[in-house]
Image: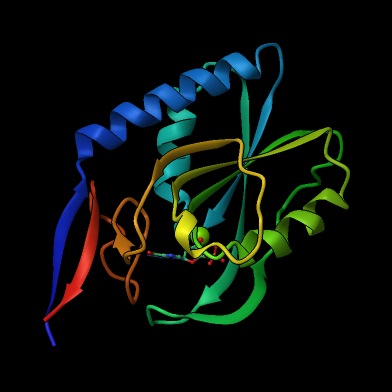
Length: 174
Ligand code: IMP
Ligand code: MG
């Protein structure tokens, strides 16, 4: 079976929207320092692009959580594969995700992080697939809502491929 990728959101549209969201976040956090938590690996491109456009001071940490294998279906298993290097106690945390799909990953991760006593905690996601939600997640910043299709690019993979695409595409199999 061969795969083809159709453009869903162009590079220009993604960049424009990230700029808008960064402007909003910079306003909301004026006078504060944002502690960005990037959820690896999918969140890495978005985190970097967002961070570059924030005008308030930023610190960053990284975390890896697995929820999908090399398939298009959720395994239902969520495991913290790499924890944060630093404490988040007293920090204004902004968790950065690539996509919120079922909500299973964040509904497990958020309570774990809140136990560590951040000063504030918000979620920012590049993409949201609301049709697939199983667990409610409180998301403060969403760049785009996408339909119930498997998307790749801008950090998102299919079987570890396509993360490096500069746009968001939909995978179709023929
Ligand atoms: P959840 O279903 O909200 O727990 O989604 C967990 C993770 O699955 C996301 O952070 C992505 O890394 C991955 N994921 C969900 N939907 C897609 C997709 O359409 N393309 C690529 N990865 C996805
Ligand atoms: Mg992710």
